[in-house]
Every structure is written in C-alpha cells, then in structure tokens.
Image (cartoon, rainbow, N blue to C red; front, side):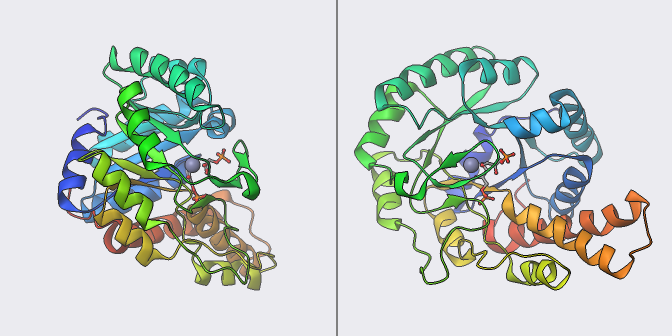
Length: 311
Ligand code: G3H
Ligand code: 13P
Ligand code: ZN
C-alpha cells in the first residue's frame, strides 16, 4: 500500500460519526509510537508535518520515515503538510510527495485567503493531492503559529459556505473555541466550544469534512509527572475530551493533536532522568518516551476519535 489521500477516510468518518486523528510528527520515535497504536487498534492515520518540523527534521527524512511506517503497518496513512503559509511551501510539499496539504491563509482578508487557496487547490488537484484551508482565527502560540487571544475570531458559517464554494477545497478548518498550545484556558476560564457554529456549518455544507485544530486535551496525569520531575507547567489546560467526542459525531472529520504528544513525550523523559540521572544512552530514555506516545494515541483513537477498527 502507498500513502493515501484523506478523501475516502473523511467520507467514511462523516457517515460513521467519528474523526481521524491528525498527529504532528517531528522524529522517528513519535512516528513509531503513533503507528504502533494505529496498528494495534486498526485505525487510519494522518501524520502531519509543520513548517517547523520540516526545518527541524528535513522533509526527506520525515517522508522516508512515514513511508517506512506504511510498509511496516499496511495501514492507510496520509502524509499532510500542517499550516502551509504560502503557495510555494504547499507546492514544495506536493512536489515532495505529500498526499495532503493545508494552506493556512487565515490571517489575510477573505478575498486574499480565497485567492491563495485557489492557487494551491489548482496545483494540488492536478496532481491528485487534497487541500485543507482555514477560515477564522485560533488563539495560541506554536513555533510558527502565533495568534493573540484578542485576535481569535470564530468562523462565520455563511462565509464558510461561500469560501468552500469559491475555493474548491476538500476540507475546512474552523474556529469554534479551540486554540493551539498547552495553555488554552486561564485557571478560571471554563472550556467552551461553539457547537452552534459547528451545527450551522454542517447544515450549510452537507457532507463536507470540517477540521479542528488546537484540539489537545493536555492530560493532567502527564502534566503532573512533568511537574513532579522538575518541570513547571501550571495551568496547562486543554479541550475536554467529551467535547472532542461530540464534535467527532458532528461534521468534524479531522482532529489535530500535537501538544498532547509533546507533553506525553517530555513527561516520560523527565521521569526517566529523575530516576536514572547517570544514564546517557538515548535509546534508554527515548524508549519510555515512545511508549508514552503509543499510550496516549491509543487512548485517543479508541475513546476520543472513535476511529478504532476503521482502517
Ligand atoms: O499548529 C501547529 C502545530 O502544533 C505545529 O507546531 O510549528 O511548533 O511544529 P510547530
Ligand atoms: P494542539 O496544540 O492543541 O495540539 O493543536 C495542534 C494543531 O492544531 C496542529 O495543527
Ligand atoms: Zn493547527
């Protein structure tokens, strides 16, 4: 089996009331942990690479690691560019063999967003590659993604329908209250998602796959391990998993998870070094880190996304 696009995955997910997990990958151990979980529960997977990940690991290395995952697992796997911020970056990922790209021109005006997105759609569709775009702004901070909370803006459902029609995209990321990073809500803020917007989008765009970015739940048991082993992550609060589960039964077909993987990976390494301060073989501390990725992804696939057994 070769890398696949998300077209058929999303059709089945929409009809089946579940979502596909889109996990950010930066190195071999993360890919192995995710793919072991996917293989064990027989789930389709989206492995996504950000501009920062391309810089860190080199696109060729990541592509070859993901190809190895396909060979080893036999699972349907999509290789997706996360938050491509220009036509040139999307083109480069498509030329490198990615089967899906995100053009994120959400920081521009609607007209400019449509113009850039259409350009990517034209290039991608001619080469059998699918395109995700974004309308509305998410709050939060990642290496290359930074939108102030005050700039966060919910997606307007009518504009979403117009945007899909005007661009010919295959899936749309919308802003309904999720945000990037591990610190999504202040200690006194109640997590809240605008399910009314999601419902309205679903009505205006029947059978059209919606994407949720910034959807980590930030597992408190892992944050505790980090903090008990010399870390400092107070008030790291994410999206409640029941809310993600609910979104997955609606129009949401792709749920993006990065911060949860970072927290899990780091918690295992911190704990390992605290317990084994004299060790220095990377294989020793990367083994529990890889296991932590496997455990959290397996939990997400079964209990949150509902896509176990759907490969
Ligand atoms: O949404 C952004 C992803 O979490 C990627 O983060 O740019 O730090 O790799 P990154
Ligand atoms: P989190 O930071 O919530 O994991 O979101 C990741 C994401 O949206 C990647 O595009
Ligand atoms: Zn994102």
